[in-house]
Length: 173
Image 1 (tube, rainbow, N blue to C red):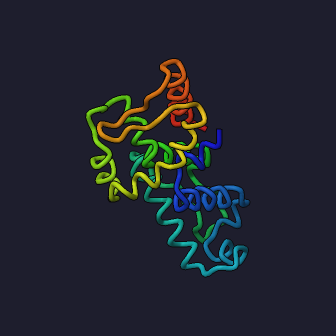
Image 2: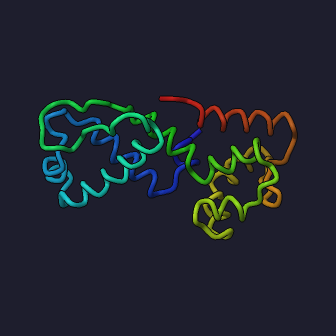
């Protein structure tokens, strides 16, 4: 199952790919200027991308620890190397699709409008962003319902697809 494409929108995929590229660099090349030179973009662009990722890591993954000290002008390795796979799981859990699936299981009274509002989206935009999930489930004759939210179809197939989706969000790299 193409989990990242199913759960993450383009912005989240870009952040994940950026993070993976940074983590693949040798520690002495993990500076804004060096990475910007390699990517052919400005150091400001790299810095802004990194700040968004650092905010994610600091607030949600390890709130009691300092964020990783990457992209600084030093040659020492980062204090905390969080694997890209773990960051991907975090992004999947926080995504619209992840929120929808968790809500189906834990808060079935929620409506699509509630979930969309929680992500700062309109209901129409939320439906559009749920299309990859809807298309994936349609392969198994499973359907999404939006008011109240739910997943419908032949029960054993629904259980199997839900367990696979939850498995993807529950892995830790």
